[in-house]
Amino acid sequence: MKPRSHGGTDQGGVPLHDFSSNSNTCGPCPLALAAVQRADPTCYPDATYTALRGQLADFHDVDVQRVVLAGSASEFIFRITALAVLRGARAVWLPPHGYGDYAHAAQAWKLPLATGAGQAQLRWACDPSSPLGVAHAGLDQLLGGGALCVLDRAYEPLRLTGALAVGQEVLQKFWQLWTPNKALGLTGVRAAYVIAPPGSEELVVQLEGLAPSWPVGAHGVAMLHAWTTPDVQGWLFASLATLRDWKTRQVTLCESLGWNVLLSNTNFFCAQPALPEGISLPQALAQLRSQGIKLRDATSFGLPGHVRMSAMSPAAQDALHNAWQHLIGKAI
Image 1 (cartoon, rainbow, N blue to C red):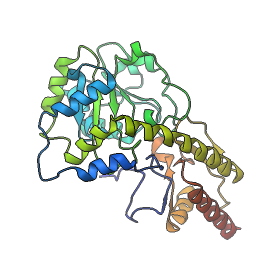
Image 2 (tube, rainbow, N blue to C red):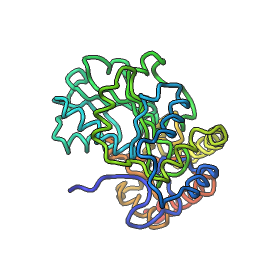
Image 3 (tube, rainbow, N blue to C red):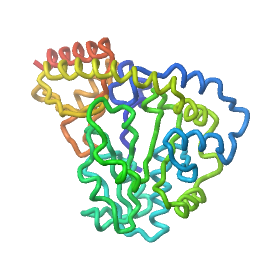
Image 4 (tube, rainbow, N blue to C red):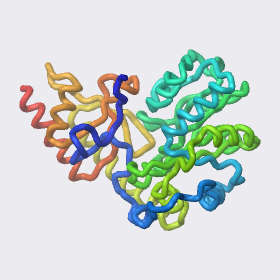
C-alpha cells in the first residue's frame, strides 16, 4: 500500500523545528493538557458520552441529538464514506486541493471520483482549507440533491483573518466536522465530533451504528470537555494574536529568500521556494530535515513545487533562514 503523506513526526522522529504540521505552535494549551493528564485511563468512558455530548451541544447551541462523536476526523471521514456507500452513493466529489483521507476513504470503498459536484452523493469541502488556508470555492453550490455534504472545520479555530464563506442558514445544511486537537496543540490526542444538520436523526443513528464501542478514549474525552470551557477558549483567542505576529514575520522572511508566498487566512500557508539550480524540492527538503527542520511537500495536495508551512516562533524561523542560506551556499 502506498504510504500516506502527512506532516509532523516521521521516521526521523519529532522534528526540532516542525513547520509541516498545522498544529497551533503556541501550544499545547496548558489547561487542556492538564485536563488530559488528569484523565483516568483505568476506566472506560461513558459509552453514551452523555455529559460530553451535552456540553458540546451547549457550546454550539444545538440539540444534543445532532452531536456525533468520532475517534478522529479521519475516522469520521471513513465512517461517513461507508454510510454513503451503504445508502447507494455512486460517486464522491472532492475539492481540487484537500486532505488526502477524503480520497483514501473513497478508494477504500471503491467510490469513484465525480468530475462535478452534482454527480456525487457525497461531497467534501473545508473552510478554511488545507493546504491553502482559504475557503473552498462554491460552498453553497454543493448542497442539494439529497447528497451528504460535509464541511471540514478543522481550521476554523485557527483562522487569523477573514470569515466563513457561508451564512448560518447555509451552514446548518452541512455536516460540520470539528477537530479541536490542532487548535489546542494536542494533535497526539485523537478525538473529534460532528454537528449534524437539523432533521438528520435517522442518519445520525446509522452513523452511530457504524461506530465501534467507545470511539473516543478517556484522554480524548478530557480534551473535548476542556475545549468548551471559557478559560481554554480564552487561551486560544490570545494565541491567535501571537500567531498573527509570527505569521507576518515568517511571510516576510520567506519573501526575503525569494519564495513566492500564497495568501491564506490561517496560521499556515503555502509557498514556492526559490530552488538553487540543480536541486529538486525533495532534495532540498531532505537536506533541511537532516538539520531538524521539516516542511510539508504540497505535491500530494496537487501543488507540486510548493511547501505548506505553519507559523512558527521567531527562533524556528531564524533556524529555517540559516539552514536555507547554508543550502544555497553549498549549491553555488
